[in-house]
Image (cartoon, rainbow, N blue to C red; front, side, top):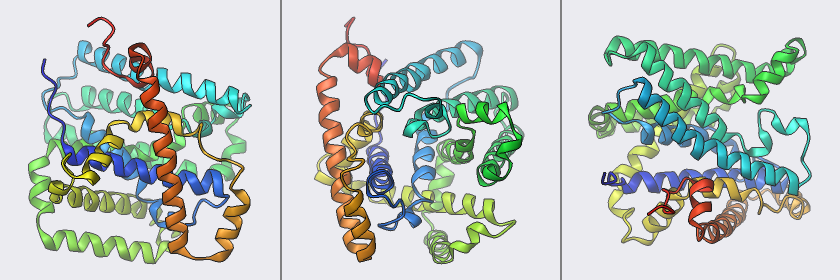
Length: 351
């Protein structure tokens, strides 16, 4: 079957979101301060955007969630998400001497994303199969309520974890193993599927300038008054609204400027290449981060307090890490066997 034509601006958007992820890891893992270089603002952009794109790409209108389809999709996702993660995570823990029980907790030394994404696939598929098998508005509402419940539960668990974790006993270990605190982002994955499912409506609404201006001003206001994220009763609505708002803004910005993001443009070609190799970059970049070499430099950079300089330095380091990761990826992909089992490349061994 002929592979569906890729949407170039979606690949570019994936590449952009991957840059944001590495951009955060540089200060948090290497410079000793996670929130320099405007990362306190970008905190509400990265994961909502990344998971929304994942949901958008995952949704297929012609899928019927019967037993054979569920089994086939989950098997494929397990081979692409879990097996490569297990291999690279084990190698990383061994090389960096992190072999201890705490490495299996929520963060998994950074290797939580692909595992949690697989959990999203499982929950979403089962919810659609059991609550929305008729594929109507009532079923869609049921799925939305379940998604919001899971996301809210995870959000407040993450917020009050330190206060109540001592009372959870073994449940805390189980929740940590499954990275339960990361399920708060599930709502954005679901939102991505909704955009794809109702794409014509989404385009119609996002093409209205007054709607986009309202969303932009709303996001700016929330960024200027971050206390709203910590106001009792407004924490989760603020988290949800800011994530959806910035996702719609960026999605629309890339869609309306897709002529600048084609393979004929160097920016589009670069972003698309990164976007098509997000799994490779994610799995490999932890090996190349300069964890301890830049701690003193990070301290001096923070004391200098120049946001523009921080952005430039972090961005340069980000692009260097991505380039090194892509180089390593290209070398590994010379082997069809490794390309298939480590990065989910379609099997060329039998062709």
